[in-house]
Figure 1 (cartoon, one colour):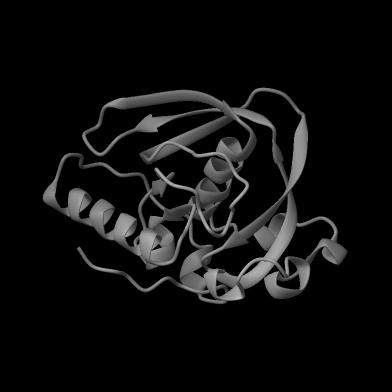
Figure 2 (cartoon, rainbow, N blue to C red; figure 1 turned 90 degrees about the vertical axis):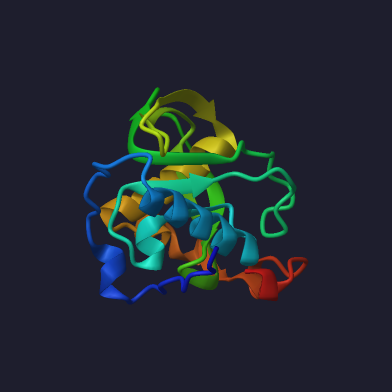
Length: 178
């Protein structure tokens, strides 16, 4: 396993639209997933999308078995590998929530997201995934899947008075963890 470099906002590769995964249960996919989890763990991420490490594929990972220091009050989200995701909002209801991003280090913003979604896709073996989720779980999935269409969370911020440095907005959080 290798810790990969995470691209930062401003890198044009983060703005590309990722193509779908077409080959499943391959050594390459399994190695990529292992590297992504190792990278995400190393920086206490809530999730990671393949484009964030320069890989143009519709592949996201998210979730953990322990409390995330970057989001200490958030509920646990099951560890998931999701390829070729499709998100369907289950209502027009949105909720605002603070988000950060490994590609936008040291900053947070208040971002509206659908409150309840259904997401479908496949796992690395090509087996179907179909879940209905809400709250933080729904937020994490929407955030990571945005990376597959070249969107970073600041593009979704509606009120820039609610966007700034983590150390200023959340003085109780260790800025080094962000």
